[in-house]
Amino acid sequence: FSFSKDNSVYHYTKLNTLQILTKPDATFHLSNTAYLNDPQEGKLALEILNDCLVGKKYLKLSEFSSLFNAKYHSPSTCFIASFMKKNDSLPMWVQYGDNGGGCCIEVELKDSDEDAFEVTYCKDIITNLFTAVLDTLNTYVEKNSGISIQSDPVFMYAKRILDQSCYLYKDTHYSHEHEVRIIRFLPLELAKAKKDSLPGEIFPRVYCDIPIKKSIFDNTGLSFSSITLGPTVSMQEQIITALAQRGYDLSLIHI
Image 1 (cartoon, rainbow, N blue to C red):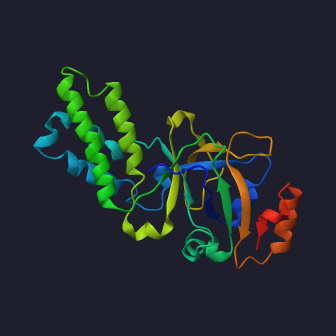
Image 2 (spheres, rainbow, N blue to C red):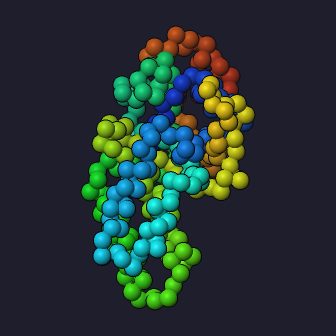
Image 3 (cartoon, rainbow, N blue to C red):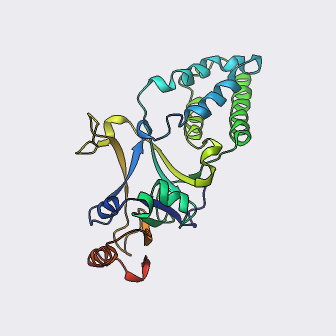
């Protein structure tokens, strides 16, 4: 699932988000998976994983299986930032770019410390990955009797792989998105909360940050290499002026 950080990715969003992201002190938010739009997010892959674990073949991994059966009854410590591999995509403008009234930000990952992964929309691919991990664990248990599955470092590392992979599989309905994700696990006590909750929400949303590269002298963080304003944006001149005042090269702003 690894995505080459030499390739650009794209983030479609609204203009008010662009205004926030281009401020001098801005950071890029990774959202907690509790707020993902699709209620089946992660759960479809978890169902496949649990189906793989059923049966005599992985009987010795039953204790490991219990970790995943309780997965969605616990607070999520997983945070995600989503990008697309395609720019100027009409479905993306409609779904994420405020019906063409937002923007599409080209993002470079090559100077970022974050790892990027491609989402798969193929059940066979995710099933083969799960099976390969479980087969490896099965062999490990057979050769190392008496280990504690709940605390053994090999099993804990495998659990991290499987947890992460569950958020790298989506239904074929979303295959047009060609999504790339950054995924990070963070203890909730180290996460942040937005100061203002959205309309209808009782509590502010929980997130964690990725730095945004502030200048050519920065060696870390995401870099915005171009900004394309949506086809229905009516304040193009004002936005271009504001971005220029914030130090953005006008040749990298497209309309």
